[in-house]
Image (cartoon, rainbow, N blue to C red):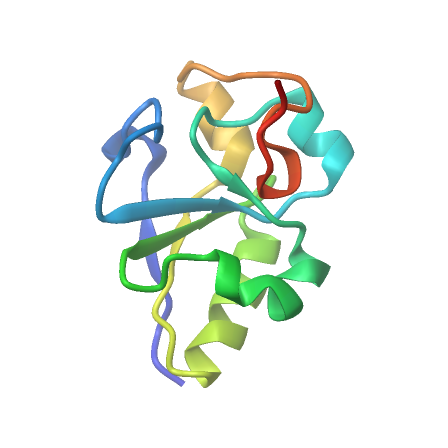
Length: 116
């Protein structure tokens, strides 16, 4: 299998709202999303991705983030076997917060839905 590409959090925008050509897919559990997430990220917990794959814009560059990268690598390998390229955000949200990049909290955007 080909090697999975990675990207450093410092090479990513602070906010994915309105970003064209890239999708940041957060595959963590709901409670993790509520504690801290990147604004504009798409949230689909790892176990739900196969049945919700149609919610992801696969024409855009797909970036996958979790807590520390383990789940992101697993999903990227799964997607690669299906011919879908994905890049792992190296170090995940732990690295994001260590780099002091901005975060949002709460349920807005959880599971890919916006709350009003």
